[in-house]
Length: 311
Image (cartoon, rainbow, N blue to C red; front, side, top):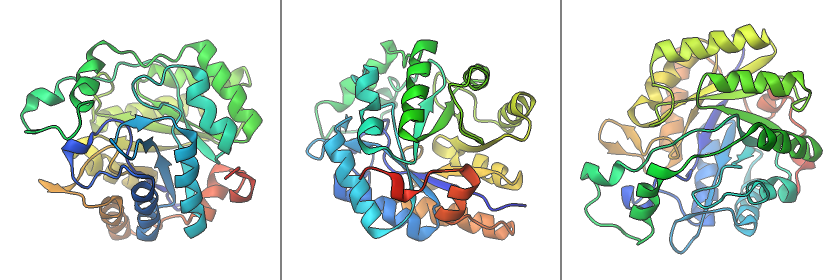
């Protein structure tokens, strides 16, 4: 069994500051959480950024540069940036500016359109008082939002990624997305090997977070790509650790982090991303599985190297 890659998704664009006092929002908090995740055993970190005054997701490249530079100055962890942004980040140019400007080693590549529903969260009664006025409208607004990625958009993405030497991390929100990736591979828009995919399970509007779903995605990808792909799984909320444990048992890679879950155990808020990384690393060790260092993960994924980024 080869070494597995552990990714920590640091803050995302789903959770809002009122949901947890520990959610990192400033550039320093996001970077320091990423460094802490590396120190706890993460091979890679996935980065969104936020307005430091309000905690609202933003595509501001200057904030990305602050975060990525601070991380790079402290450690050699692989950085995967988002290209999804948050609500209101609608143009291809806005989403891709972090790639064209900073040229990271890896970035997310949404492999199709999806509805991501967060609109029921305010009605669950868990948030008694909102810290910022943008939060509730932001969440409720997802009832009428489609995260749209057409074939033309995906081709544009793939071409920019290729020009910048950034490896696509194909985010699989639905099983048909695997066929979309296959199309882009066959047409040679995606050229890097191995193909790198994240199976996203548990979001409202996406795939159910079950072992059967995970096996189906794996077997489907296997039929398309044979041995020429590798993958990680993320489970939202309470499904994070069970699905990651299943992936580890399969000898595959995992993603944890406060983008996907705010908890480090039943009813226990994670105080940092390191809390979740430590837990999944401990599970891996109990299974006699070794975790890849960042440089070993670079070799597994065929990345260009930290010396070729632009930050």
